Length: 332
Image 1 (cartoon, helix red, strand yellow):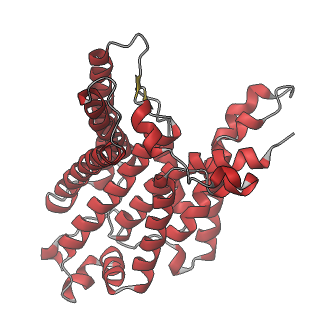
Image 2 (cartoon, one colour):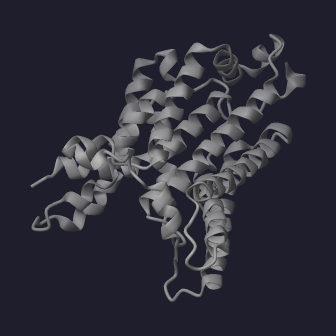
C-alpha cells in the first residue's frame, strides 16, 4: 500500500535542497545572469559547512557536550562564505570581465564538484575512517531537530512539523524573495536590469551593483541547499559524488516555476516526490528494470511546462529578455 503520510515528509526533505537552489537561481536570473554553476555552488556550500562542522566537532574534548548554537552557526557561516566566494567569482568573470555566462557556469560546476571532492577526500583521510565518508552526527542532530510538539500531533505533526529549521527557513526565504521581486522598488529595479540593462542604466540604476548583489545572494541561498542536504537529509554523512543531479534539477525547477519563488515552494516538493517515486514502486512489479525512467519524470514535466508557456507566449511567463547576455555600457 502507498503510505501518503510517510511519502510526503520524504518528498519535502528531498525537495528542500531544490527549493534553495531554485530560489537562488531565480534571483540570479532576474538580474540577467544565467548561472549554470548552481550545482557547483551547492556542492561548495555543502563541503564548506562540512569543513566547519568537522573542525568544530574535533576541537571539543571527549565527553564535553556540544554547543548547539555553535554547531549550527559555524557550519552555516562557512557554507555562506564558501558560496559567497563562488558568487563573487562568477560575477567577476561574467559582469566585470564579460566572459560567456554559459561557459563560466559550466566551468564553475566542474570546479565546485572537484573542490568538494578534494577537501571531502582530505577530511576522510584525516579522520582515518575505514569507509569513504565522514559522519558528523552531533552537528546533524542540531540541524535536523524537529519542532518539540511534532510527535504529539500524529500524522499532522509528521507531515507539517517534523523537519529541521533549515526546511522552514527555505520556505521563508522563498516567500520573502517572491514579495521583494513583486512588490518592492528593489525588485522592480532588479527586474528592469534583467529585462534591459541599457534601459535600466539610462534610468540611473546601477546595473553592476544589482547584478553582483543578486548573483552573490542567490549563490548564498543555493549554498544553504547543499548544507541542508548533508546536515539534515543525509544525517551529517558526507561522501564524494553523493549529491547527484540535484543542482541541475534546481535549475530545471526555475523554468518549471516560471521564475516565481513562491511557486517553487510547492514545485520543489512535487519534484522531490517525483525524484523518489521509484523507491515506492512495489517490489513485485515486472517492470522494476524500468524504475530509472521514473527519475526522468521531473525533467519531462519541465519540458511540458516550457512548451506550454512558449505556446501561450505571455510576457510574464517568459525568462528575462537580457538573460545570459553581457552588458556593454559603451554600446548603450
